[in-house]
Image 1: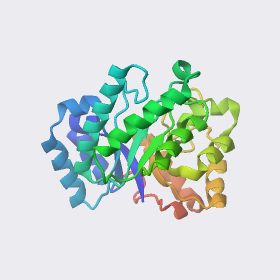
Image 2: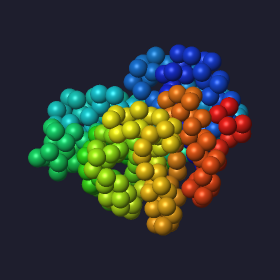
Image 3: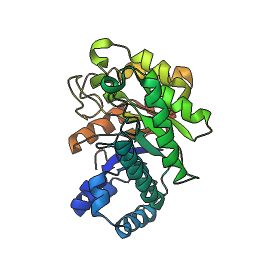
Image 4: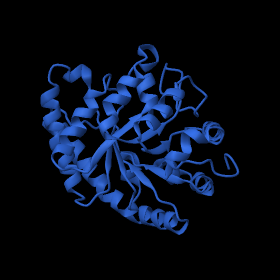
Length: 276
């Protein structure tokens, strides 16, 4: 099973965009952001969930992350972040997603000397969020601006150690751009650092300068290292493609079609016709 990102705010704003996306016949990873949450009521989400079900599509759901700081030292900001995420979990239940994705949001500039305290606060927040939906599907926590893999892995390990249903989402594009992977060349360090809990991949490409969300093969990320490493380790994470344009989507699907050895074992195949 694989997914392609669909921003719910864009779908709410432009019903034609939603229709075109659903015509692809691929499972969406629904991006839930605070702006959309304040605009769309439960009825809109319920109608979309029924539409997905009627088409035989299984969504995943990306929790909001704009301006949120689950591990903030400021109790008011931390509470606001928790409350927004709790509300998002209540909306997520409507869609019965295969899994959830959330951002770790560790700010190494603010908390470089107080990681352990940040970690304790983050665990408390995420536990409260997961308690809002006790039988929730797996929650995969994703790297964004964290410069080292352990900054993500320690949070996931701490939550897993408390019996929580969590794993790691490796966003390869974020590693390459935000974490300086293009210059540091430390992909294997990240893969090995995440390996015990690596459950999901976010796949998009860039040239290392910024988070461009190009199609696979349109940037310079060393994918020829990623997929053989997964096979060698016997890992089969689920996959979300995150193109931000139709051209990027088509490029990623061409990449998949031309490299079945990389993708067949991950349950990924290009839909026909390509890019429809």
